[in-house]
Each structure stands twice: as C-alpha cells, then as structure tokens.
Amino acid sequence: MNNWSLSRRAVIEAMLVSSAAPWLLNSTAMASSCSNQIVRIAAIWAADTMNPFATWDSFWPTAFTYDLLVGVDAQRHADRKGFAKEWSVADDNLTWTFKIWPGMKWSDGQPATARDAAFTYNYLRESIGTPNELNIGWNNTAGLENVESITAINDETLQIVTKLPTRWPVDNIVLIVPEHVWKKVSYSDARSTFRNDPPLVGTGPMIVTEFKQGQFARLASNKYFRTGQPAMAGMIFNMFNTADPIAQGLKSGNLDYGYNITAAQWEDLSKNLDIVVGQSRIEQRNYLAFNTASGEGPGSTKALQDPAFRDAIGYAIDQKAIVDRAFRGHADPGVGLVMPVATDYYSELSDIRRHFDLAEAGRRLDAAGYRDTNGDGVREDKEGNSFQLELITGTIGGLLEMPIAAVQLISGWLGQIGIPVSVTQLESGALAARTAAPAKGGGGGWDLLVAGTWLSPTPHDILNLGSSKSIGTLNRSYWKNDKFDELLAKAEVTVDVKKSQELVDQATRLIYTEAPYIMLCYPFVLEARRNDCFQGWGTQDIMSMWSYFPYDRLKPV
Image (cartoon, rainbow, N blue to C red; front, side, top):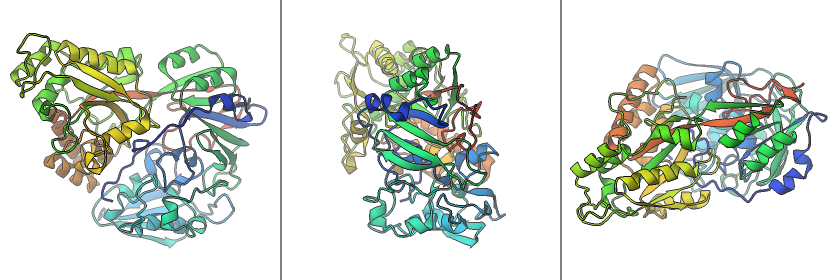
C-alpha cells in the first residue's frame, strides 16, 4: 500500500448505525456522574469493533486506551506525550531514535517497552504484499514502504530507519498495542474476525472494559498509567447519530461533555451557567468537488473536465456567506487545500484568490464557450446540451455535519448563472459507495459533490485530496495531474520544513488553478462541558481531537 494517510475519520466507508438515544437516555450510561466520579461524554460516532487493524471507526474510544508513538498532539503540546517520552532524528534525516517512558506498564501489569512498539510496526510491515495485508483499518501499512528497519535497541530505545527522508516516524497515527496480546492474532483474523473484545490492554489512562456496538463504551481508570492512576473512577463514551441527545444530556446533567453539537445548540447551551462552550479549529475541510472523470464513471457533461468551467464556477461560490449563513460564523471561509490550523503551510493565496462575483462567473463561462444560446435561462455545454447537474451530498461518518443550508446556497448561486442543479442527499455509506473509484466498483455518474474530509496537518495529508493514488477514497474528484503527484512525492520525503513549505505552496497553487475542488470552509468543532462535576478540561480545546487529553488529568470538583 503506497498511499499512507493520517486520516482521522475520512476514510471511506464509515456508516452510522441507528440511534440508541432512547435506550441510553434511560440507562445508567447517561446517569448523573458527580457522585460516582465517572465522566460521561458523547459524540456523533459509530464504533463497530475495538480492533484498530480492522476499522477506521474505532479511534474513539480506543484512543483513550492506546497511545500513539508521537502523533499530532505530542508535537503541538509538550504535556501531551504518547508512548515515546522524547525523540530525535540523526543528521542523515533517516535514523530516528525514540526514548520510551521508563518503567511503563500495560494495564494488565506487564512491562510496556520499545519491543511492543517495534512489534506493532513490524506486525504491520511484515503483512505488506501478503493476501491479508493490514491496510484496511486505523492501524495500517501506509507509509511503511519507506521504512528500512524498526528495532528495539533496548526496553527504552526504539530506532526507526527510513529509506528516504520522511517525517512518517513522528507523524504516523498507529496505535501501539501489546505484543503479548497481538502476537497470537493472525493477519487474516486481525483484518476481519478478531474483535479485540474488552477488557482491552493498553497504556492510556482509560481502559475499555465494555463495548456495545453503536451504543456506548464503558472504561475504567488505568491503575498502571505512567503518571499515576487518574482521579476519575472511569468514563462512559456514548455514541449517537444525531446531536439532539447530546444537547439534552448536557442540559440535564446526564452528560459531562459532548461535541458535534450544532451551532443553534451551542448558542443555546452558552446561556446555561452550568455549561462552558468551546470552539476550536480542526483539520476538516468542506469542499465542492467536480467529477473530472473522463473514462469510467464520468458526469453528465464534459464541461466538468474543463478547468475553465470549474474556475468560472468558483466565482459563483460565496464562502463568507456559507460561513455566516450555514455555519452561523463557526467556520473559516474556504481558500485552498491548506486549513488554517496547519499554520506552517496555510496561505491566503491572495494573488490568485477568486472573489464572489456572479457577473464575473457568467463572463468566464461565456468566454469558455458555455453560453445560453436559446435564451431559456439555461446554458449549454460545447456539445449543445443544456446543463442539468446532479449534486450529491452527505456527511461521512465521524465528520462534523454538513449543513444542508450550504448546499442550498450553492444550488441557488449556480441557478442564477444558468447552471441548474438537482440535489441528492445520501447517508454516509451510500455516499462513500457512490463516490468510490468507478474502476473499483464505485457508482460514479454524479456531477458535483459537497462533502468534507478530516486529515492530519502533515504535508502528505494536506495534499492527498489531489493524489492520483487516492482516487475514489480521499480524492473524490477523480482528478489526475502528474506535476501535482510529483510535488506530493517530493513532500513525502522531505524533512526540512522550509523546503516542505515550498512544495506544499506550489502544489496548493496548482490545484487551486485547476479547480477540481472549490474549498467552501474549514468548520470549527463545537463542544460543551458541564462545570459542576469535573475540573482540568482544556482551554484552547476542551477535549483533544487527536489524543486522550484531558482524561489523563481530570479531577472531581
């Protein structure tokens, strides 16, 4: 598998199950938590197994139990380290050394060492090329093709040697698992039947002890956690497919924390003196994609394959209005591939940035040969056919919800410039199936797509939306460009930040000009917590989206 991705929830066939809200609202999973010191949290989520090798949908709650070696949070916050206490790279930019926490234990009391980290990565690496390659879940082989060796020098020292310069050793989001549990699991079972039933064995602060698919996970505090057993007795992670029970639970006191709430709920909860609301920038990007396929699965018109047509449509999209009206201000207006939270790479692209101007969009369509020749208010393509585009939309499982108001705005603007649009709203699984690569069984045939993706802030994941290797998965526009792929390939093997910034900027400008995507906005995660039971929540982010913070340090009020 040559396409490694620090994908957060982006991948591919996440399917939300039917809501368990009525059952949970009347169960102990949602009971008041102050007295028993159990923190109760909730999100729109649908974990299907506790096996991170077999699914992308188990990051919550397994991220409360397992550590990443380093990952995103540890590079942003000095007090949010993972399995490794510290790390360094040699002058050759190939040899990485990780110091593992001394004396660390798994939740069953066995030593947790560099040997477990080496086992986890080599377990993945040695599956490459086999019929049961571990390439379908959160823990996957992506990126390991660039690794020469992974060795436990001793219990506290892990060495990773790469074939080419790459930041994969610190950027990967593989969850480190215990060798004494997983060495018994075959590759075939790891990617299919092995469910990793509770109680799990991990090094995180909260250990999954019970799991009801699509409903909840119950966790107990880890008495062997490296900084000491957390002050909380445990936690319950409730899973819903709508934000309503989350807002209700926060109001009633049956939940201590929730995210994925709507803007209206956030504003309502902000008036409650017992509740603290928060919003923070994340890596999600919401976009309008064009079906640029020219072989299998093309759209209804060849105009979708024309950069001039796509560029003109870009002038008909008012990103600020989408933020103000569809997201109630809880987002940043879309510009290019890079999201503002990726501060090392973000650019306003001010010298090439489009501006909302319906008249200019019309002029550019005229100049590109897409005119309304018969005066019926609808433009024709170069084959003489009147435009009638199908726009499909939906929210991929685990992403922040896409407001239908954003789609309605886009449809209205396109109609005003003579491009009528019909909207088809799909649930998560159907959307993933419809946009999968036509060559691999995807439905294809759609014209426009309004969707989102939530990947890491690394150069690879920033650019992966345009990678030809990701067509039908992360690259849902089916766009191909050899120069873009070349820039992405160079960025993957570049450790120097300045050089990486130059490569990302070149690639971002190229894809912006070609316009297979129009970035709509970068939504904020809206979250809320109660202030009457627990203290120690985050300030910039109440709860991390990349680790188990703050559940390693919460204390009863």
